[in-house]
Image (cartoon, rainbow, N blue to C red):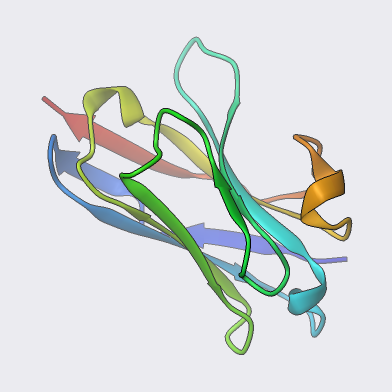
Length: 123
């Protein structure tokens, strides 16, 4: 079992930056593939980024590639999402996710989800 708590969301102007953090409980954080999803009002939830257990492999949605960076600190049980050059279409609730399966096996189905943090980008 792992519990995930996101923080760092807020209101930012287009072109600005935010860094989301996700703190995980438990002593086996390094065993989990971690990721971020988002859901905008009236839209389906979509994949944003994921990172392997060691942090050496990362994947991004095309919509955020080159603007967002996922990273993790296994000593601090925390995964981050650095978001730069934010656009109004990035407005959404952002969810941290975790799964014990390796990155190559997890797909878009994760066992553990955080409560989400709101990101609003004004134009």
